[in-house]
Each structure stands twice: as C-alpha cells, then as structure tokens.
Image (cartoon, rainbow over all chains, first blue to last red; front, side, top):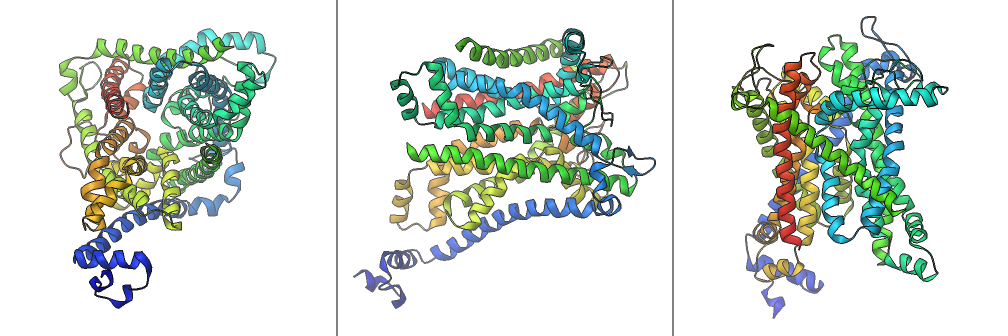
Amino acid sequence: MVASLSPHPKGEGKGSRGIISALSRRLSPTGNTGDAIFRTALFSVALLVVLIVAGMIVALASHSTQSIRQFGFSFLTGREWDPIKGQFGALAFVYGTIVSSLIALLISVPLSLGIAIFLVEQAPRYLARPITFLVELLAAIPSVVYGLWGIFVLAPFLRVHVEPHLARWFGWVPLFQGPITGIGLLTGGVILAIMVTPIISAVVRDVLAAVPNTQREAALALGATKWETTFVVLVNGAPGITGAVILGLGRAIGETMAVTMVIGNRPQISASLFQPSYTLASVIANEFTEATADIYLSSLIELGLILFLVTFVVNAIARLMVWRVTRRTAGAM
Amino acid sequence: MTSLTALCTLVAVGILVLILSYIAMRGVSALNFRFLIDTPRPIGEGGGIGNAIVGSGMLLLLSCAVGIPVGIACGIYLSEFGGGWFVSAVRFLIDRLTGIPSIVTGVFVYAVIVLRMKHFSAFAGGIALALIMIPIVARTTEEMIKLVPHSLREGALALGAPQWRVTIGVVLPAAASGIATGAMLAIARVSGETAPLLFTAFGSRFFPRNLNEPIASLTVQIYNYAISPYDEWHAQAWAATLVLMALILSINILVRFLTRQKFR
C-alpha cells in the first residue's frame, strides 16, 4: 500500500528510507525543493566561514610577502626593530610575549587549580554557583578596562609594595635587578594572569567535573583522605588540565590592549622583569596606524601572521587534550 | 588545605570586587548628564562621550546584523546536518576562530577591507566585530538546538512537514531563548573589544553621519584617554569605563537570571 503511494518505482525495495523520502515527496510536493534550497543556503554560510579562515591565512601571508622575502627567517632572530632604517627583527617581541605569558601562567595556574578544586570538590552547591558566576565575570571585563586599571592601580601598587621587596630579597637574581618603574614585564605578566585565570579555571572545572565519581569512591574506599582523593582526581584529569593551561597560554599570547597599556612598549631584551618590554600583539596595536612605508606595514602584518599561526596551533592542541579527557570520562559514565 | 583553595577563590573574587568598586568610585565622580551627550573637547573644556556611545551602538548593530544570522545559520548547519567530514571541519574551524587574537582579526579586516576602500570606516569595524561574534553565536546555537528533544522533530516530520519547515518552524522556536542568551553574551563580549577597532573603525571626534567613514567607539576612546598624559582625560576614561561596564555587567547578569529560570 505504501509502495503504491510512491510515484517512483525506484523508491521500492530500498528499505524504509526510500519509502519515507518518497512519502514526503508525495505528501508535500514543494518539500524537496524547499529542503534543497534550505540545505544549500546553510551549506554556503558554513562554506563562507571556512573561506574566511582560509582567507585570513591567505590575506595575512600575501600582505607580508615583502617582509618575508626581504628578511626571511632572520625576521624572527633579528634583534633590531628600526622603522627609520627599515630594519625589522622581531626577536624582542617574541621574547616579551613568551616571558609575559610565562609569568602569567606561573601565577594563574596554581590559582586556577585552587579555584577549580574548591568549586568542584569542596564548596557546597549554594556557594559554588554564585562564586562560579563571579569568577566568570572576571572574563567579562574588557581588556582595555584591565589596562586602565593596570595603569592607575596595579602598576603603582607593584612599584611601591611589591617590586622593592622583590629587589631586596631576590636582587641577586638578574630577573629582579634594575630601576623600578612599575611599568614592565612583571606588571604585564600579572595583568595577564588575572585575565587568563577565569579561562583556565573554567576549563579545569569542566575537566574535574568530568572525572567519574567511581574514581573518588574507589579512592575513598581504599582509605584515602579527602586530599589524597583530590590528588587521584587531578591525576585522572591531568591531560585535560594540561590542555587548560595551554589554552590559557594561547589566550595570553594573543592578549593585546591590557598588556600594551602596562608593559612599557620598548623593543628590548632585558633579563630584568622590571624593565619595559614589548609583545607581538602590542607592537601591532601601537604602530599599525603609523606604518607609512610598505615594508613597515608588511613586517607588522607578518607579526600578525605569526600570532595567527602560533595561536591556531596552540589552541588546537589544547582543545584536543581537553576533549580527550571530557570525552573519555563522559563515555565511562 | 581546604583553606588554601578557598584562599585562591577569595583572591580571584577579591580582585573582581576591587576592580569593579574602583571603576564605580572613579567613574561616578566624573559622570554627569552633559558628559553622556557631548562630543570630545580639548583639554580644560570638558567634553563627553556622546559620539562614542552612538558609535559603539552603531558598530554593535552592524556586527549583530552580520554576525547573528551567519552565526545562527552555522549553528543550524552544525547541529541539523550531523556527521560527515565537512561538518567536522566547519566545527573545527569555528572553534579555531574563537581562539584567534582579536588584534589579528583587525589586521585581517584592515588588509581585506580598509586597504581596498583606502579609508577607515564603521563598516570595516562592524565586520571585524561580526567575525568575533560568529563563532560564539554558532556554538551556542548548536548546543541549544541539540537540547531540543527529537520527538518534536519526529512529530513535525510525521505531520508531513519538510525538513526546512521543521527546523525553522519547530526546532528554532524551541531553542530560541537559548540562542538569544548566546547572542546577548556575544554582544557583551564584542562591546568590550578594542584591538580590532583600532585600525578598522579607527575613531572620530564627531557624531557619526554615515557608515562609510571612521567612527568613534567607547573602548577606543577609553584607550586613547587612558594613555594620554592629562588627568582630566583620565577621569573621563574612568567615567566612560563605568558606562561600558554597566552595559556589559547588566547583560551578563540578565543572561544569568534568564538561564537560571530556565534550567532550574
């Protein structure tokens, strides 16, 4: 009887799929054209997004060819950044980016782990929910606002209350020598730490929450204390936690405004954390509109290309690591 | 040891309270009605952020007009057209789009639009912001559509509706409130963006007249005033920050309130 509904003999004998599609064709004659249009429209939008990402690589690469041709690999190893002489080497920016990001991770990783453990393993629900929201609000504060606060509150605070003490007690390490201004790598690192903490702690929270309860119960049943149990949970989620840290790193590398406002913007490589420095992102923000010479602009766009590629790879690795943990444990539950 | 983790949490929340209360304190003292409607003036003559508020509003409208439909369409595509390598590839690239530093988005828009048009414009700024919105809207749309029970789709299909009508007429309305909150969060996120606007929308000292010229925005205004050497402009930067934070915080709290009602 169903087969008789089908206008096309092809639909017969092809199982229920053929029958249903034949039915829907019969029952709503406009349906398939509509579906085809709908499908194509959505597909082209999705394709557009793919093309945008591809277009980003192509546009950034094609606009930086001049600088790539002229400097080649020495662009990354050259220490001199001199727009007047037309000499462009990005080593100082790479250094500033790496060091400020490392300071940020050094501070924010223990902090984020503490927050995540507190919220997932220890805090009662009525406390965990509002606190989670408050920590997430830290991520909602715009970069430029962090920068403003950094200039007028954090930098003076570090200059008066933190850096002199670091210099007094750890002054024998080159990291903490030199004049104290409050504007420099350390301040940039601290402000980055505040900015990536909500991101790292949110992902660690998801990872810890995805660790199956059987792990906790097994540890407790073996006589483990609460802290030993937490340790088991941490070990279980270790790859995901690493992923969260790498995700924070990717974020710190690309962060622009706040760092630009407190890091001092001087292209130099200095061992001291009190000294001004410069990052890849902040040199683009600062000098892009001033770049009049083609080679200058091309060099700045090449910095953008480097940032794009580095964050792309770093984030892809991080997501993969987080996904492997949350997927595995989700399957086990 | 529990006190140690509690301390970590306290530090984070404490910093939030410190920042917000400082903004409120410095902001309120410089804020008045004239400041909200006036344009910037030279040092010593007061001036305000009226043009920046209007500019930010127009940039947000532009980015929503592009970003929200494209984001929702991507989200529908990702959730309703299931597996397949292309869908996975789109999902992967959209996730990567989230992680791209916003300054790079600005450089991209500069290279593609500003260089070609040969001048900064509100249009370019709106596109830059839209590029940041798309992945956020797309992923929330996908998640929200996945929450719609299958029985709803089957019911509609059984009534003879073609797939496009099922998706637009049944699935989307069921997921609408979730999608709306996702869009609101995306708006909150881009309204704080500065880096992608520096060399796309650029900035302006006047009220915007059309979308084809440079346009002021709150965030760029805050940045320019913050790095200026004048105390008066610093005070104005704090006041502008208070306005911006009021917008962003109220969106975040509203979203929180809405989702709380829904998932309880």
